[in-house]
Length: 176
Image 1 (cartoon, rainbow, N blue to C red):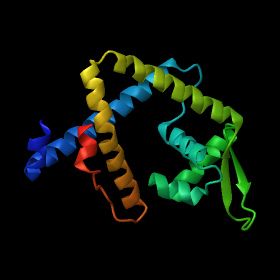
Image 2 (image 1 turned 60 degrees about the horizontal axis):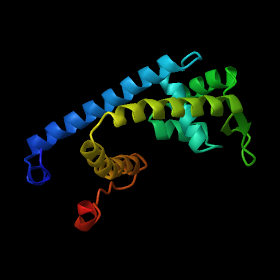
Image 3 (image 1 turned 45 degrees about the vertical axis):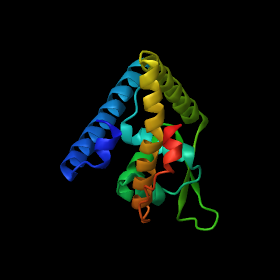
Image 4 (image 1 turned 120 degrees about the vertical axis):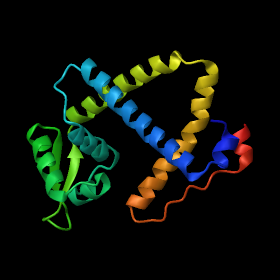
């Protein structure tokens, strides 16, 4: 659909666009995860455990309560998942210096290596698929990524209790 017609699209068209975007994003993530898992030489971890490892990797020292809030899971669910990850040797629970009742999470080196292998494999798979696209399609995708990133950032802000902001950069930046 050309950009001009999206700007003036009635809400039903926006609903259809939203549905297609959600479907495509979900399918991409599931298919990619399936292919990455198939190419790994270790037992696959459940997606929920991988999400926790990714989050702890991004935010070392994060509390279980904060993991639960960020992932939209119940604290007791996250606690159970962390217990499994700790037992498997992927995560250390460290008592908070200021409050011994609070556990902070850190990845163990084996988890860091596993996440890096996952990222490398995912990058290889996506790069292979992207190389099959025409130059025009790759340019189109590159131009769409900032929009997708703003949508994700807006969803993150809303989850964190802030007001979602999807303000687009000035029109000149879209034409370049």
